[in-house]
Structures are given as C-alpha cells and as structure tokens.
Image (cartoon, rainbow, N blue to C red; front, top):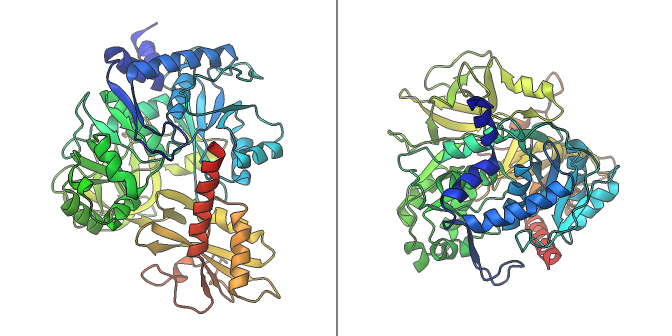
Length: 562
C-alpha cells in the first residue's frame, strides 16, 4: 500500500479518535453535566479517551458480527446522549454511515427520511412512539435496535442481523460516507447531504485552527457545546475539534438558559459554542454569581447580531467570535482577523482552503460594498475538496449548487475594502428559528393538505430571541370564515404532521396572495419593512399554542425515556 492510500485509510472519524485515545488515554473526552431530573446519568459523569475507546471496541465487534460494514447506513435516534457518539464511532470504525434523526420529528417526517435514505438499521431509545408509527408505515420495514441509551452501549447484545452484505469493498477511507445529514431546502422535502470522512475530519480541523481570539490549545480545552448532534455544528465542528486537539466535549442534554452557567462553571468550560438564540437567552436571564465565576476564554458561533455580541461581551467578559457556515460546506468562516468590524455582521475573510466571493446573478464578482450572493470553494484546482459529496439521489440539485466552480450558498453578503465579508440575509425562502432551518415550502405543503386552506404562503418574521419565526398567510377555502377557531384548527392540522418548532406562530387570513406576472407569490410584500406581521384584525397570534406544543413535545420525549 502506497503512502497516499495509507493516508486515505487512516483519514476517518474513528482513526482520528483512536489516534488521540492512543496518545492520551487518560485525558477527559466527554463530560456530562449533572441534572437530577434527567433520565440518564443524573449525577453527571466524565469519561476519558481510554474509557470510550474500550466501549467503542466492544460495540464495534458486535456490529461487525451482526453483518454490518462498509457502505451500510444506520439511523441513530439517541438524542444528545453520550451513547450517540459511542455508536457513531463504532459504526464508523467498520465503515458504516450514520443518519441522525431529530428527536422532534413526527412520524411523517421520519417516514420520509426512511424511504429516502433506505437505512439498513435504526438504533433508537425505547418508547419512541413517532418512530414506531413511521416504521409501521414503511415498506419494507427497516430493522430496529432499541437501546436504553444510558450505558455507553454495554447492554447492546441482540443486534438484528443485517439483511444485506456490506455494499462497499475494502476498508473505510477518507472518501467513505461518514454521515448523511438532512437539511431543509427550498423544496418541500429536506435534502440528504452526503458527508465523507474527509469532510468531517477537515471540518473539525478547520474549526479548531481559526486562531486569534478563538485559539485552541492542545490537550487542555473543555468545550461546552449545547448543540444537537443531529446538526452539522454539533456533530462535526465541536466534537471533531475536541478529538483532534485532545480536548473534552461538555455535552448537555439540550440548551437550557437557567442551567447554562451552572454547567459551564461546574464542568470548568474554557470555550462556549453559541447560536444567536443562545446568546439572546443568556442575556435575558437575571444576573447570577455564576456568570462571573466562569473560566471561559472565548465563545464562537453564528447568528448573533452585533448588538447581542456587544452586550454579551460587556456582561460576560469574553469575545463572541461570529462566523458563517452550512451543512454543505462543512468548513465555516469566522471573524478572527483584524479589523473585526464589530459594528456589522462580519463573518470572516476569504483564505486558502476556504475561498469566498460575492457574485451577481449573472456570475460576475461584485465590487466592495455591493450586495451579492456568497459563493465558496476550497480552491480553483480542487473546488469541492472537503465539502459535502452531494445530495442523495439528486445529482441535478448538486450540480445546480456547484455552478461555475463555486458553491452557491443562497445567502447575500457584501465585502469591505479590506476583504471582510458581511452577512446580510438569506436569498432562499428559509426560516431560521433558534438554530433550526425550516423549509417554508415544507410547511406550505402541509397547510395545503388542510380542508380549510385553498392557498398558503409561509414567510419568516423577525423574532428578538429566536432570530426568526413562522408566519402562515392563508387564503381560506369557500365557506371558511377567518377566526380564532379556524386558525387553531389549521394549527392543529400542522401539529399532527410537523415537528413543533416548524409550526406557525401566526396565521394571517388574506383574500388573495400577491402574485407576479408569472404567478409566483410575492412573499416580500407580505410583511412590514421590519419583517414583523402587519397590524391586521385577521392575523391570529398562535405563539402561546406553539410554546405549549414545544413543551408538550419535550415532556412526551422525557416520558418516553423513563
């Protein structure tokens, strides 16, 4: 085997972890903050690299003996428990790819994922009622392995034997699929982004090497990452950064502003990864002694506007380093080079390995100070290196995104004379609520299935805490009178088919939707200039219902773990 082939073989998620575990087995890898009311590890715990390596090795053999291997796909519905990482690394070691499932998904959403990805196995916690409904609706029904999710895979014994031989020859390598992540797009259904081992490892290495105010030190960092593992950032940026630097990943069950500073202090965090909603929620909490006791050196993330970052820096005493990223690109730019231009949403600069440009609709670079579409690539010679491998079963959409050698992000930016890029807005009809991407078209397709709705348009309203919120403009069917009751019936129709975070916060009844000459809905005219619902007697505020639905969904999930 030549040196190039050897490097490709070693360049996997598992081999990255194994190398660190061999070099520093006694260093802490996972820290679970204590939470007395949690269904797993309520007292909290810390596991070193050697501990986790033993768990992975044992589980790896059991998967292998059950017939799973290179090229198989396995869904994981294990929430943010440490078991998720043990199962992922064990499966990656044998060349199997994982498909994380959002625990908030309803049966129809899971059923779509199953039919599209065709997983060979689903590993899930006991009591997942929506998953069971989805499996019952699927043909053929996928194999299911139910686990407790609180013992790092120790109790996993009877893994259902694989129905097929591993589809790929040889041992896993850098180009092998490591994960399939579903991301909402502008079409009605989410797209499956194929992520290779090279993507995952290089993304983590890039994140940990930004430097400046966001400098990571080998073997000492403790990163508090309140992000879900079914998201690119939680799965690849923070987790891989710790594996690559020998650091410790602090993994709460979910973000909770009331307990965040307690977790950060108790677990001795040195870095915090944020979303804009996290910064806003921390600022809304009353001052506490713990927020002055932390040992954080910096925080880095995306989605916090300049005023949020300014207030957070002043109150908490650390820089909040803003960036930009998306699942397809993996690598994320961060604003770590002076001048920082902190008065704007500056996200970083073009550099070797992640080149950025602002293009006009006809594909020409726009001058500094002019709005354009953010387009990115690795380099002119190897534009797609380290990026996603493509959209599953949709090569046309993949090539459409990669026009003229650049990946077109669908986001608008402008550039300072010194090269710093400033994020402005999304070009796509995407709603970004509390770190979740919501496809307007997906919500519209559910609304259209209601007997009360003739036509629907979904747009993003500005929200001071969650960044954006869902507004549904409805043309009612004949005989349906706009009313609180009708709005609630439409809301309940959606609640049976969509995850709670996707539900409309407002329903606005209109006589007709504004159309262009080509019969496209003019969505930009539906909201006021500040992106808030227009004052209209026919606009029904459903935010209380949505809050209750989210609380109920969380409560049901908790009960399912007991």
